[in-house]
Amino acid sequence: MALTRAAFLKLSAATALTGVLTACSTGSNTSSSSNASTSGESYTIEHAFGSTAFDTVPQKIAVVQPWKNPDILLALGMVPAGTPYVSWGENTNRSTDWFDAKLAELGGEEPVRYDETDGPNYEALAALEPDAIFSPYGDMTQEVYDKLSGIAPVVPAPVGVGAYETSWQQCVEMAGKMLQREEDATALIQEVEAKLADAVAQHPILEGASSISGYFDTAANTFGVYTSEDSRPQFFTSLGMVNAPYIAEHEGSTEGVYMTLSSEVLDQVEADVVWAWVNSAEEAESVRSNELFAQLPALKNNAVVFEADKQRGLALSAASPLSVVWVIEETTLLNELATAVENTRAAS
Image 1 (tube, rainbow, N blue to C red):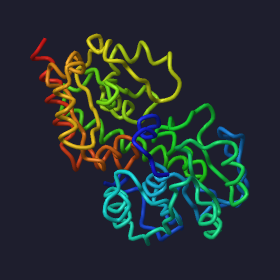
Image 2: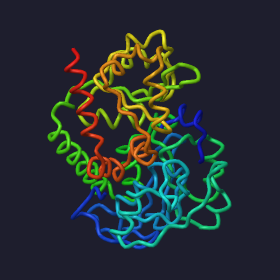
Image 3: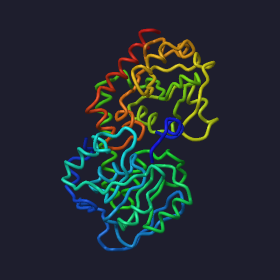
Image 4: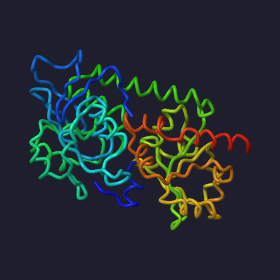
């Protein structure tokens, strides 16, 4: 679904498994798996809207919501039969670099792409005639779930998980259940988490450092921050960092993955590093020169990492097994975070 800036603010927000998965073709699961269903027995997946029954393991899977969901399947060696165009943070293929790199590694065919500007593309999905629709990450409603279920069995968010709150690990677990490859899903999670741990070992100053991720609204003079249920803080905690005390203390008073802080309280919002997405370097400069925002300790300490690269921003905003590895292996973000923490420590 295409997002306006306001919607993006309020909502969320490299190969990961070597030696385990093998190449596959579009819509076909060719990976070997010790726990894949070969008996043809039916099985049921519990989720936020009840349960979905499968008579056989789906082989032709369509995706709703371009963030996280297609990456999950691809990381497990399953090329989606169809997936939406990426409409924020996309590359020239209207995809992402990490998705394209994994697809090339697997030797798979490009999935059918469809537009989700106005929500799920029911017509395109029906034309695909998929065996299943995979969408554990997003803001699916009961109405949407019912409509999608009229096309194919649906795998939405896990039980008890709200809109845009499904972590990449939970998404992988749901895919493992759908594909009857739960051991492979566990192996994928462990592989990616090991890569993250190795990266942190190269930047030990990040361990235990406090962080905030958000966005400065220069028109309203407010600071929008993401709660621990969002992908961005989840990425930073996966690096051994902790949520800033002010956010941890106040996030329970809000619903969802986003909360707004007025400029009057910014002097109380301590953090070793702040990651903030911006639309341009000029916007970052306008934040730095704003007298109200200047009360934020991280700005005083030169400990704000401004993110103007939309694809890198997407990699964190909708973190997946592919995107987080891409971040740590193909970008300088960890170096930038470490430098910000060093600046804070030097100022104290």
